[in-house]
View 1 (cartoon, one colour):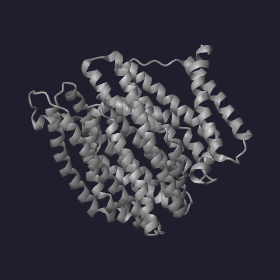
View 2: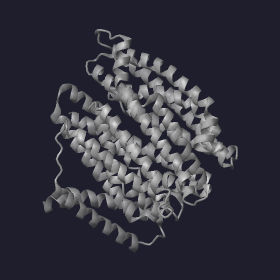
View 3: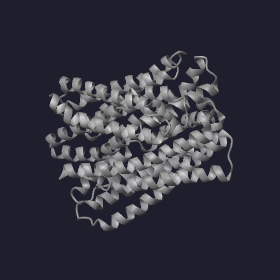
View 4: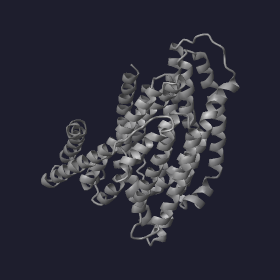
Length: 500
């Protein structure tokens, strides 16, 4: 029954994440059309700052709340669940408001000293309210994940992303925004509005579910105990997220500096960043929504099984998730390497993205799998190890980006190399900790057969790409993508068994 619920919730969240992913993808395409490569580059420089402050105010909060709610709801102790949401929301509202005020009054300094582009000033000021909205939303999302109602935040995410796309298009067209500065500012203003809409919808849903879930009379836990239970989990995760985001922000902000050092103009550096991180990575990272969905369902389930000491179920689930993550990343890489130019032309109407898409695809299998290992460690309660491993990987990323992107003939491709190396490092470090709890075994024979099957599928797709004319680019691309998934699935499930 648990197995069925896990996959049912995963499929539901995957469908929702695909919907939000498509909306985000459409949003990225619109940005590329309205802003150009340089504008997308500026947008990408501001986003790490927003992510950094989001991690500071709510990093790990939804995971910590979902774990505690899952334990309490398992005993039908909804009175303590309601108290948990109330006290956590109050505490986090005060904290996030303080951080938002600090960001607002230091936005000019950040624009001038760190982003080194004053066109980002008003965007930074407009994202300050979003920090408060996203913090309270994280608590409410953790509530729904904990009571196994993941569909609620999933549907609301679709609402928020759809409204954001529509409002951005309306504002740009109504006010006829032409300059990069005004357009980027409008986009971040809509981001804050979207987070507010999401918060209101989550709160209404919370009121409805709170009324329908009748509490069982039990010993009331003190507010201090509830806060301790949540923040003893969330603070290590918050530190982990904040430090990782801080180093990631430093890595992102250092890119234009190192590219200029390599001999590119500042506008050319922003264009390279926009093409790689704002376009190519969007294409190759799109299927990760499936991994995100699995991780969302996985963390509370592992926590419940760990509380019951059901290690067999944990090992079984972890093995399934790792295999799905690796195979999904592998077929994504094969498709991206087979038709990189088609993907760039189809989604962004550009002929200069093929090399960037192919380069970003090389790290996808290990990237997807390492992403899953972070979620597994969170579910196992290994927050301290998660912090240490993330810190090691982030420092490694910063060093590699600084060295590689400053070499002219490598330039932005240093980002792709860095992704591969850091994701591999993360996977090795995380698996070392996971294997202390779960018995995970990999067969070298299976790996060799998988490699041969991957080469076979890649050759078939590449031959088809050369044979089928580009006159009908949309049906050709969709056909090759669908055929790639079908062939790979058939090869892994049928042919592999025959070979073994």
